[in-house]
Length: 247
Image (cartoon, rainbow, N blue to C red):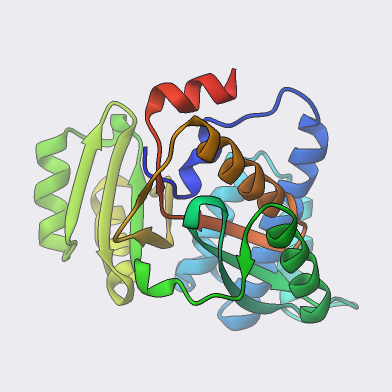
């Protein structure tokens, strides 16, 4: 399994689910606020907001919480001024890591992440983005349509690639084509499960069990930081090792 952010679907901790849920709500709310601030409060005209609201619905956030985040983005009431920041570095075993954050205090966030990297055998601040591609990714559940129909529709919409499996359909686009591809697909299949920009590694580092344990520990800590929105890394681990580590 490639080491981008989907590792979280496997690496679930048994405890602290309420705390994790609260952090997830806070991160989605922050994304909604920034999406509104940078674009329109109407999700029909703001693909980033539309994607964030889909995430909010999947996380079972209440309408009141979503509405408050939208109003904050419109400048209603006092609120923090969040900045989008990308941090790069290397983790254990030379694994490259990209961390995307929304923060109201760059110095605090940078200091916290630098400490995490240092304490877990990493090097904060190294340039690694060249080992990743920035792509648009649209996802649909398997029930949306069959693989052939999705492939045909995605090609017509201008997508670059499609991967269909029992888990669903993943449509890959150029970063600047995401909005257009998403809109075209939604006219045929309804609202997407998610649609967002992601970093995807163009080269990977194979890890054994010890290496995977060390890297996943660091990534888990980074992901739990309140300011961090996404964590992406370029490692490769066998499914059997991941299952063993998550047991």
